[in-house]
Length: 76
Image 1 (cartoon, helix red, strand yellow):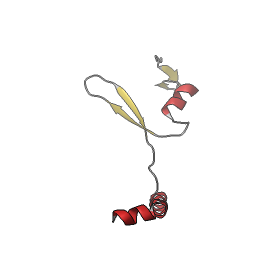
Image 2 (image 1 turned 90 degrees about the vertical axis):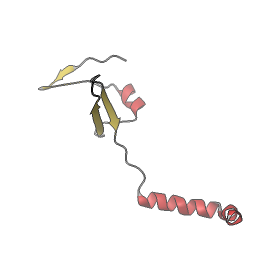
Image 3 (image 1 turned 120 degrees about the vertical axis):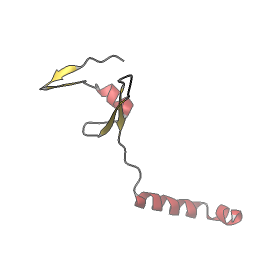
Image 4 (image 1 turned 180 degrees about the vertical axis):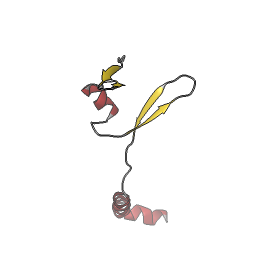
């Protein structure tokens, strides 16, 4: 996919259409990490995604332990 750098106010930028945003699973307001590769000058944008919270992890562990209680006892 080829994009053209455009003037946006007093800056320059690239406009991402909705299909590209959907493919990258990002939306307006999301943060991205920008890396410029030495030598080639390649610009890499990586979405910053939060992992699950401690509460979500804890509840998933408890649910798994409950669902597989018998199997876990046999393995112990």
